[in-house]
Image 1 (cartoon, rainbow, N blue to C red):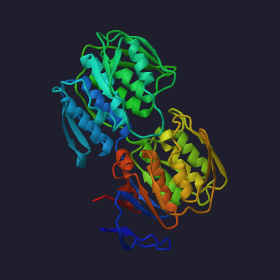
Image 2: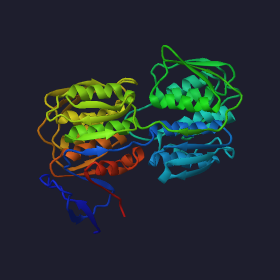
Image 3: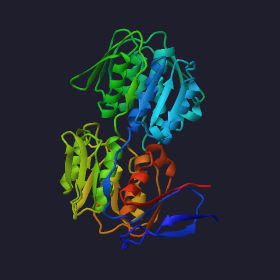
Image 4: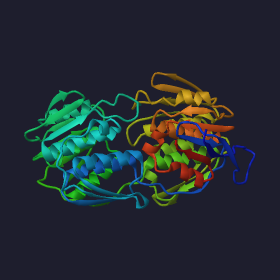
Length: 448
């Protein structure tokens, strides 16, 4: 067997960790040793949930656009592959987190099934393709297995706009003679549906209204992009987006909004390990409810400058808090799993209500392997704080679950090995390196 170098996990060691040889396994993994009191300053890169839809929106233009602050994650690479398959010329510079996209050469309206099934966000090309070509052939998208996440909200409202659908094997064939402006109603403020419908509406003659629209920061970043392109969009209360169609849109230059979810994960890493961390490039108001819950636990949260930058100083004996996930500006579902780890070691009992995805407790059995006391009843989990977690071999089942298990490994006694690393790579650009920069004993191993 091959050998790999991993970090000694002796928790009594205060200096830089020593190195030990162990036998390699057959799968990529993240190896974590107990890493108490993370400290330091670190920036976050652009939001995955913003860049994917913004890249899809470039289909609406013909010409060269430049996007900066792009994370070098697997999902971004998949979206680049999708755009190239449609005919776009995409030049990606990962060291500069920059992509130059020329959409003037796009000539296809069919997305390969193998690309669609690797990434949930691939469905977001439906609106732009319908607006540009009046056709979109797609397969049902893949991604994490955290819930059904049906595209009914997309399809039903596209049908109101005149789109007709046919099935051909695993492909969904969408066609329209001319998109029609309509009043579109979302039963639930779906981010993906809001984005998809809005992108179709910007080139549709007349006024389209999306009622009960999602207004996450990532949606607002897309709106900023579309306005730069020349779209006419207004946000009206309550939760309504009004779009007046224009004849054409132009290419743009845009810096992607920072990843509030990565920022939240790094703040939790400090909270869980009893450390102090500063993130200077994230806006305080992107995480209001999440930060309120950290303060409720007893942690000290401060702005670096007014409206900009967040620092945390962890309290020694945090209190358990209860929370419920909900659309923005509520508690983000994407921070539920990492926040659960913080409750595992807090004093008292936490009740967690997951209202967004029905399978977002995939990490619970893995945390239980580590000694966490968690019971699940439907969409609710109850967490009883324990004194310690213990390192073992755990498997990540989704992007945010992978983050939760890594954070648990930072405080677990002994060594933690996390497999299912493809989820980690899909969601984050070298978050392991950022944790290491803050003092974590962590190594990302790749299979050979």
